[in-house]
Amino acid sequence: MIKTLFFDFDGVLTTDPSGSATTLRALAEQSGLDEQVLWAAIEPFNRDLILGHTTHARIWPDVCARLGTAIPFEHLTTAFLQTPIHQPVLALARELRAEFAIGMITDNKSDRMDVIVRQHRLEEVFDPIVVSAEVGHSKRGAAIFREALRRAGAEARTSLFIDNTLRNLYGAAAIGMKTLLFDGTTEGAAELRSALQLIFTSN
Image (cartoon, rainbow, N blue to C red; front, side, top):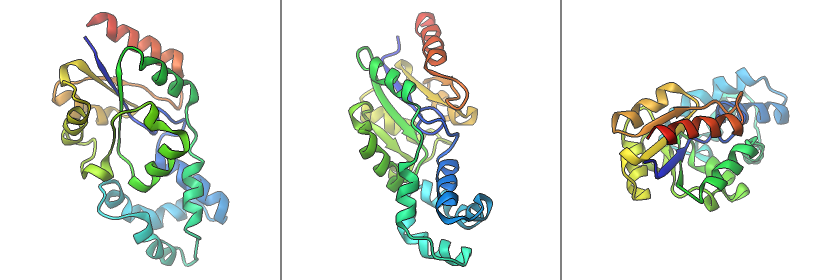
């Protein structure tokens, strides 16, 4: 029996496939620079940001130097605030709290998630919210899932992880969690509800 549901963030609870896609689009609109040019300046730092080895505040002078222009740091916070939440899926997660423990596991930058969690009061829906930059592990391995289970007081065999990328499900499956592939960029809450119901009735 499934008792705990863990949601990914970008691509599941948002209608963009990744946080980078959201941030680059918003920065391009504010700065007038091409998204690919922006990505070329930010990408060398991306993995360290996701694993918590650095922060946007630390790298921003280097990013601007690579771009050859100064982009106000405040533009980055504005970009975070423009993250398109998949409201029907968020509403479904909120509804499911009546029957299940609901958490979040995401490969993300801690400063970005801090802004978004406060903006949408996500802590009222998801507990725990486990961010790769805070635990030093990504969804490419099992450690972040073990940490999420520990914080939730949950067992792997009674937990389900939902993500929009197949490779991100392997670490969860390796420790005995159920998994579900769901693409919030093309699917809606009705599809997610149906997929979950199939899993619930087969367990």
